Length: 248
Image 1: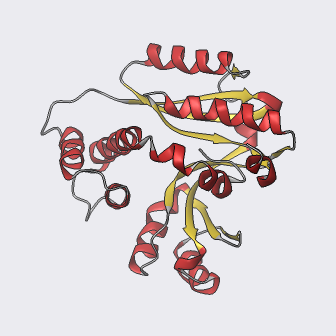
Image 2: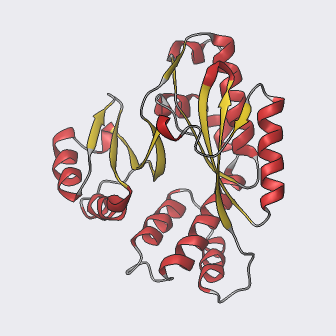
């Protein structure tokens, strides 16, 4: 899940996320399969795949799972044919939500996503309805203890990053989609390991959520969407006051 207050929200909900390791492995497996299918199974010639293999290692994903996902992507093992879809909708409070799905059954995914929005106070929107609220960019979240701002700027900006945000306890590096692999390689070469890295929908503007009840409803909807089998990532354009999370 990504929002303006991504890091604080992620830390706050870490215990809940730790319980979803099986789902996390499934998400990474699908990403590895797609990366290998689109760019080949050799990470030396497929930067996206190399980034995902590092992500799998950081998540302590079993080697057998990684190997299986790779071989499905290269065709060495039979596997389902995945398609990537994007759903757009609104959470309580008018918060915009983008839902990335990788599925072998479009009808199932559409039904589950729509039902989840409806049950938890949101509603699904038409394709393109939220496009002007988000920018598609590469995003790297790096804990502040891992590097300095000056060192990060030198590496990331030279590699093609557009912006580096200092959020006190973490840095956020943003780059064009086309430069994602180049920035990932530069960080890897410099020994700076991101806590999270992905192609994200970054809000161009955010909606402040100052009511505790609305904040809880938003997070409940996003949690439920993330729990769906076919959902890879969920992005929202909210700005939740950390104090509201502490009230839970």
